[in-house]
Image (cartoon, rainbow, N blue to C red; front, top):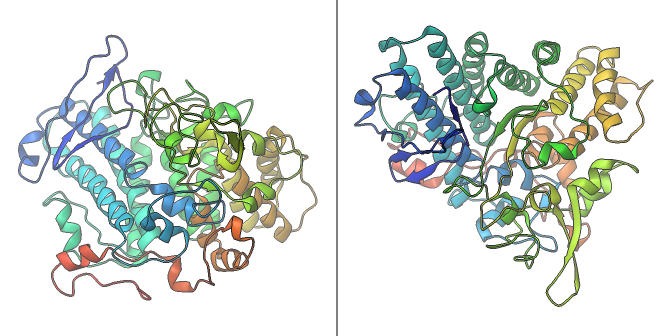
Length: 496
């Protein structure tokens, strides 16, 4: 389907996958054949079937970042955002993630597990069956590389959320296989992730035509592998991957930070990997503006539907920006004027609300950035500093991001001071893009940072109501998953 632009939003119908792709010329629609444990053997007949199956896997990934509320685990858990501030909202299960008041029956814990393993199952279906069908070898390599990377990203998310998880790498069964496969060790999960990515990278193209924006490139897989190595504190190999992405010259910084979030910027030169959405076409729009608009702003900040306040900005986050940082006022709104003309103070993420509120309820063009090039530069700077101190390249990378933000260049820092500076830069550059909690955990700062903010301003709750402990660095396994498994196959994380 080389003439198809893929907007990665899945339409869920029980066990049947139905997805739509939009032709750039006539905007016709196609339905993906159903895939389940009973049809998988007969589905894969041609190159087109595999193309649809791969895009169907992307569609399921979109559900991880929407239906499964990935932001709850990556952003809300940390100190950048909260539901417990003016304008915040959400049900008790979402708030319990914010407050570190978790138990295994939390419905959000189950959603991220289910959606993650559905992505894995879709990817496994392609990987298990593709060798049996004869078609263009370059396309076959591309589909294998995409599927391996999609599986690797999903396992990376799952291992960071739950710790060791079942490793399912074949399509012999449906998602239930994840309920009856013992948990692999964290080390074994990371070994599988690295194997998938090192196999995928040489199979992937450097770029695609504009009609295929959103598909995984070599640079996207290399960036993911670099982040995996960074998480494992393998700084030398992380730097190698990030430098390969930088040295490819396939990416560059846009002129302004704000451009990354503007309408019509899908597939821009700073985008390394995006989940794409399209308003006004079926169910292909995103819900991000409705989710992020503060309660009470429906019909004001968003044109239709609810304003749910799932992920409101804390004072702590607002105050962390340096004086003159252009990103702060682009990223954060201070409130809104209600229908009675009264100003309602409520900090919210403008990137998902003001820039592209959409035309209707849960129907925006607002995309989700998995990786932007600015983030690659900052992770490269971190890896280089950890591998030998602040080198000239490390300064070049961090300063490129700072200068665009209107800030002075850094120089003459110790390794420790550079570390502090790059951690800060990562916090404000990708503040609301699903990295903060995992960055705190991987750098060993989660407990100290979150506990330092216990008992502060009651109007600016940034997380726990009382100090957190080591076991809370992971989330509990869903109780229903353990109950469904054969007795003793799956065990719960300590502390839950």
